[in-house]
Image 1 (cartoon, rainbow, N blue to C red):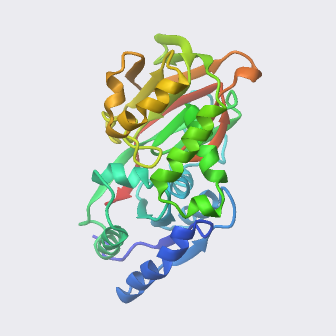
Image 2: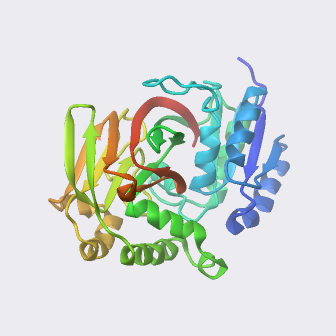
Length: 328
């Protein structure tokens, strides 16, 4: 068995202040443990995807990400050949089935990491897991997880999501969080999401949607918020999909039907606990494929995946079981 340590690329989201502050300490931990690595500091949207994909094609076996859910999702996208033609009905191929993704959570919400370990854990704990993997990759704890393959703008924009896609109000909130100024960025992640949600609610109007699940069940209703989930948490600790499991081969689809903006505001504390599923106007369905349609461009709903704005409806999603290895 090959005892050689894996070739590693560390991607650092230099735009995020929290990641910039975290990186020197992580770098010291890796250096003190004599872990060899290359570094890529992001400079633009999509940079982490390009860096991860290029590294994997050059033989890299481990990509570690210092950043939040958005940067982690971008890096995960680099594990798949999205830059090549994907036939309708197919999914993108893996670049390397043996490569792994390591999380060094330093973002606003860190929801994917939170879901993997059942709560937020210190950055040092994740760094320790990375060191252990570099020393003994075959003996360290990993988890093979599913990913979501999605397309927005009626198939024009394809993307990978590792955690949660939100359609409608949730995507509007994500866009507002991304646009917040320095004063808001200094606040805790949960406060930033709540402030963005309140602002988005005031300007929002619900629209009629048609949600088709596994090509045999359809829901049509007036809706403010929809989610297609692989993981449990989104929005800085909101338990959107409490029954979701990242390795069950299923999408957890949530559709709010005929719920007013005022009701959504009242539901926020219940969403944090995952209690919103007891509301009879919230439908939760397990599926492998889902499509979301609206009538006309004026009624199109925005889409975000893992905090990254991805376009608008019409949209389609499918699960890719066991597609990505995560270092735990």
